Amino acid sequence: MDQWEERMTRRPDPVPRLDLLETAWQLRAPSGRILTCGVYETDVGLEIRVGYGDDLLYSQRVVAEDASDKAEELRLAVLAKGGFTDVATSP
Image (cartoon, rainbow, N blue to C red; front, top):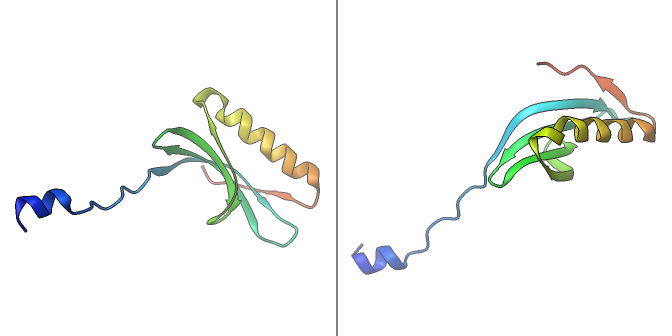
């Protein structure tokens, strides 16, 4: 490949960063599935993500100081819906 082709060849898109920093909580749904809330480091900062495995239901960017408060707020909102029970999370 000559220099021209190197410059004009499309580079692969970078993979966005999504590193799990902490699992804030896990709840068992009435269906038996586990709903998980995690705090993630992304390319643009911290993000709270809630979902069933790879099935993302909720996502919000947060500042570090608010991450645990927002996670607890979401946990209480889900528990208020009824039918969900706490699952012990490992440290």
